[in-house]
Length: 180
Length: 376
Image (cartoon, rainbow over all chains, first blue to last red; front, side, top):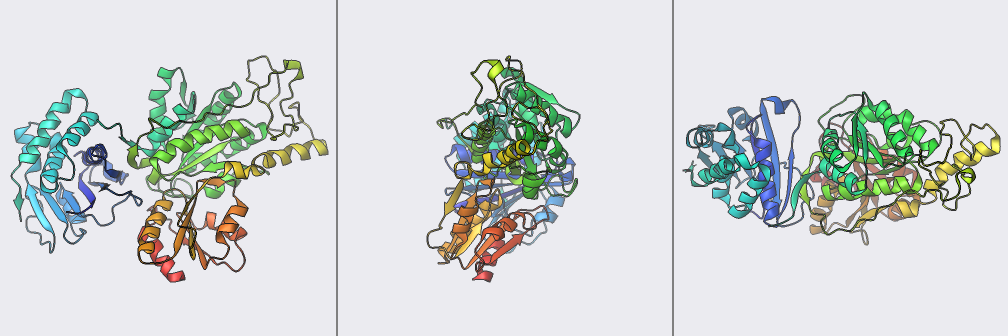
């Protein structure tokens, strides 16, 4: 397992990509690790593809950005087109549903799970797809502890929607993940 | 559960201002500094402070200068275009010796440039943007935690030297989120020296204070004095008498430059045996530090001098660091604004190389590694 995670979360503006990255980074901090979170601000946040990046490491993190990720999540076709060609060899690609189903990724572990479908059908709220995705990523990588993730969710959501998001995270953990 | 939080640079700046006992904010929101205003608007009123959204940056400066004259710790936050508008009143605060803090979260310019991206293009503007001879203090933190502490330092230096202090963040640091835990950190808070003499004996611009910094009375406290942007005598009234003008203008510069040893702080990384010296500040210093780690693993003798204080420029310290080096490289997100100062003081036989980037993106460690290998 990589000692340092270089994570890029990508999707469409409004899917909670940046919030998802903040939750992940804060969970890593609670675990006692170092983490940085950054994003590309701009017109992209008003629709179109959006991305956010997280570094997680046991060591001090100097350069806070991600140039080539070793884990990429794509939650839209457009983001897949834009970012899936740039993943470190031996890295992980996580796809929402049938996004990029015909793609070839030499030397990359490709996983897919119906993240948005789970959010919509199991949880009745598509807006928590970002947290479902965090569950999927963590069930593959175990990069943060479940306790820290729960605490991070508690800090990031007001009480009225915390339980829903905790359920979303657990649904992501239990999702059937296919390896391509 | 851990107290460590994930905090954004701009939020850390706002938290630092609160810790420094700032009670007045006036500003005109602008990307990428807007979060500073947002946080102040929620944090100041419950603490008895005042938050004002002004009609523009010129008015924002007028408001904080007025507030500071009444004894409050006052500040504003902006980015390049707003900082340009503030230059006239920055000069006014210099000559009237009013302590204020200006947070400039830099973005690429000139003009409105690239609002959402990063730059370090206001280095020279911070120093020479307003006309006339003067000095200024400018600080450039490299992390979220350091942004908190340097914000406090900015208020302390403004109070101590009765001068505007510019906190030069860049978009990368302003919008970066990382660990923040200041619970157990003790911070020193400095307040301006106020007069204790009877009001009729008060000399508001006394040139004879040992540290060059006159005592400052709060407006409304019974000490009447005149505040003007014209050259003034010790009483604060306009003067064109040659010795009076000369003494007061020279003091405006010397009260800062004579204390460069106390003001200027640096971080030194792997300097002892280094053959190639990197000098980098703000977000780019992080890329430089990563480059140093990578190159040291390969046995390359490279070190980093990271100025946290951009102005006043510490001529002797920078010169000493450059002396005997095979080369000095100054990576920065502008076309060599700080490198120009390094060149000015470096020994003639030490080559000073620039590594510049002005497309809004951060200089990457790999670019610095390549440049070091090129000069070796």
